[in-house]
Amino acid sequence: MRWYKKIISLFLIVSIGGLFFLQNKFKAEVILAIDTKLPKNTTLEYTKIHANVFTGTVELDSLSAKAVYTDKNLMATLQANTLKVDGFSLWQFIFNKTIAVDNIVFTQPILEYHSYSEKQWEQKDATANSQLDKAITIHNVSVVNGVLKVKDGNADKVTASAHAIHFNLKELQLNAETVQQKIPFSYLEYQLTTKQIFMNMSAYEVLKIDDLRIANEALHLKNIFLETKFSKEALSREIKVERDHVNLHIPEIGINKLDFGFHKDVFFVAADSGKITQPNLSIYRDKRVSDDMRIKNLYSEKLRNLPIDLSIHRLDISNGNVAYAERVDATSQAGELFFKSVNASITNLGNTYKNGEKTKIAVRSNFMGKAPMHLDVSFDVTNKQDAFLASGAFENFHAKIVNSFFEANLNAKAEGKIEQIYFTFSGNNVSAKGDLKMKYEAFQFEILNGRNKVNTFLTTIGNVFIKDGSKAGKDGFRYGEIAADRNNTKSFFNYLWINVQSGLISALTGKGSK
Image (tube, rainbow, N blue to C red; front, side, top):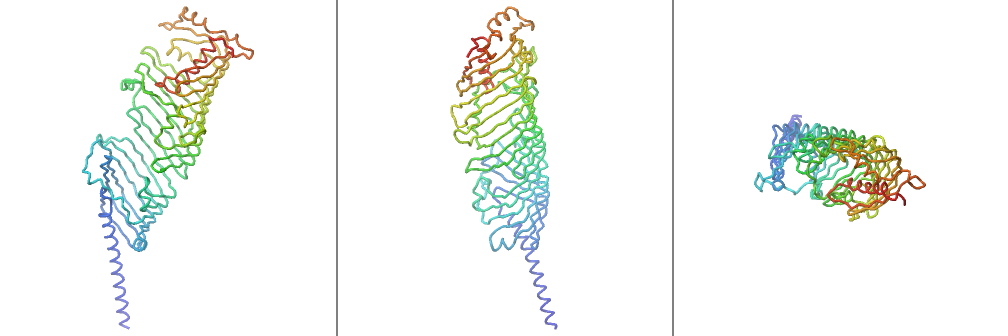
């Protein structure tokens, strides 16, 4: 029986030795792959490595990586407590030339992008190895409590950041074909949550988001803030031409059936529907600053010229508030116009719709919190003359509700009541024409002097031209014609106003009949 024991002992020794050999060989191969198989522009360091050939587990402690892209003047750095790989299939690796993994988990990674205005490295360091000799399949990729920062490398200033990132990606596939695409891998689904998002939008505005969640093609954002960095007075000192001082808060945005990616070389964003809940927007403009004489494109042209493909079937705005204030001189306070209970819907928002499929905007609100109003605008993004149709109405408009704005900006006051105003006009990026009708009582203007007192002479002369509201047609309306030429250095809202203004003047001072 002794020879049996010897054979068994020898078998155990060989088996155990073989296992130790496989374990050491596996760990050595992992280390060799880290040292030699990474792209030439990437370095990776770690304090300790754990590798188990039997469970297919590899774990790196205190991971630190860096990738340099000299052609883009960009460097990316990554630090993580651990990087753990579970379920590595040695069989797939050896016999099918495939890297198959069950799970990859990054714990507390901090990813930073540094941009530079001048090249900091030699070109030879920038050549990434785009060849992929083995296909990669990963069942699940997770990021636990990560941080993302984008920095201006010259000033080491954070221009964008996100915290508490939790990310999960299912069924990642990476192979020789996918690596040639804009997004170099395919996947089945993903989930993302993150907090405290910050983006430096320009030299003047910042964007902050408290909470972002994406799951099952649904995007939810909470507490979105778009703010001017400076106070109103400081902004006026910083700028050379007019620029709005903006304060926007949106408690919640929801987007359904969200999809994005690349069509060939063009990035696209598509969604079935979205809702913006209770936005509160305040805009202040200092008219003492020089006008911005750059051409302002109409919305149709802005959408048409987007650098991406955008298509949102329907976007709703619920129960918002908008306020606009102007400061015209150093002595008076800014006059303000505001809209309460703003509810709006936008359909076919984007630049991928076919000829004849119109973008439609419908807005309902209470002007100055009291006068119900609505505005409807439609246009075809594919129309290069930027043709549009606009219509709207005001009801129960008491003139005194706008006197704070008139006094500060027009040096005038208004009296009387406008029961109804209806207008419709069509135009393009050059001019517009249409009709307006209004029903009013005892409407008149008072012209003020420098001491904010009524200038009786100018008021009398001015009101001579305003026709009595009782001198109307059988239906009680006076009619006016709308005709206006666009100043392309002004906004679309200015274009809307000068059209309505021309109709008001025509109805108040003209024949008043159709």
